[in-house]
Image (cartoon, rainbow, N blue to C red; front, side, top):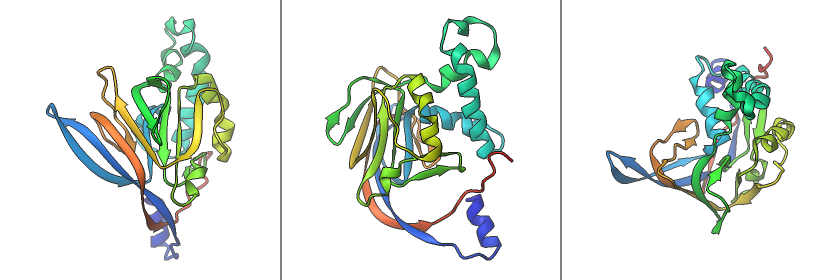
Length: 233
């Protein structure tokens, strides 16, 4: 939004592009009552590392591309300690940061009618368009095919996720054991084990969600905005 405002204030022409949207139906527990909701969006970190990333990103005073770089750096730097018995040492963030980032989300996942194995997912992400996070990380290239979303979901180990960082930087396909990066038309999640979901949809938290389903929605025209290359500024 800041980039769009800056572009308009300069009097520049704002190009638009046509993309698919997502229709999102869910059940949210409000005052103990299961309440249905429907919304629309373009990208969602439904659980796992993406959801944890956004929790840290929005906790920053002024979230920007440098915040993304800091989260990635802190995760990688702390992993050898936080993901090992050394985490018992009193080393501040080094003892906890990566463990917090890779905390799995307890849920069942259905992808185009196929039940995925496991109930502890380290990543549950979906989008109906490709996403560029501050010219630092790029995801969901398969979503640029009309009529399809791109799901990145599975139970990969933290080290598998870290090994994919170069692919994230260039927008490549995520690869590794127990990790899917594929086109789809529908994805559903259901909370298990008493822990409700807190998916992030286009930057907004939806808390206390027990079930949520993403489907391909109508194509819409949106402003085409390119983020500033300021991650190292």
